[in-house]
Image: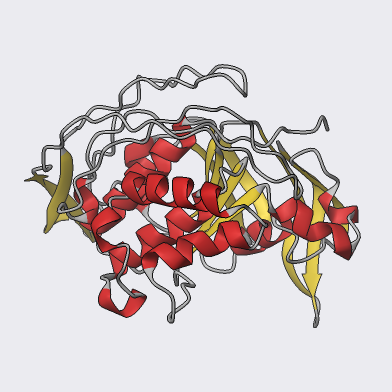
Length: 344
């Protein structure tokens, strides 16, 4: 799905952002990029989405040689990629619904497809009841949920997230991560740059650590580091989706509600006398949601760049819109990304 091969990125003045970095990300992976500020995390994401070109080395994304693509082909590549940023990047003069619909309008999707897919993804992120609100009327967590919905509404093969919880409180961050976890379980590959120790430690996904532009660790089911800061619980780890071939109905196993734990900090002494924060778990009760099946109308996308499969049946997980962002209800079925991957 993504291959970074011996990539070096240098900026003016001789600043080295990445040095001889190599990384492979398979379809359906969930990868955390961790490291200090300036370690090269954001540069790696910009190269993957072809906002920048490497100084040396090669990058393949979704079967395309991204580092060698001519500029006129870059928009085609980006239709396989959804992006989520720390600062939301919402259009202030458009409603929640219009912000999400804009991603489909920009790729030439017909109105009946927009009218079907936007409500589905707003239900997924728990914002159906606020579809007519403007960004300034939403909390930070709600704005980020709109950003995630906009990134996923096209059912991309890959979702790249740059510090998506950086401006959010811990409880709200958990809600965002549960949504990203659900999206990943539909088959979308997720690569996320983050400083959030607790989320990385709780989710135990693949961790790629960068230091001064070099990859120094690539660990499956890894933690941020050896010292734990606070504890959270983000959904199950033992259930996987059952995905069938594109064009057939896709079934996902239910992702059950689980307790989401926050914390209050207290101090304890380490062996060398330094003080570090330890976590005391505090239960955050999730709002109950009622299971409901929502069946998609059969849609046929116009062949703009990639055809959406005709006749797909999609079920969107019910979400109680009254819950806070850290209390997203249980997930049922979500449509599998519909873009076919080319062979690298």
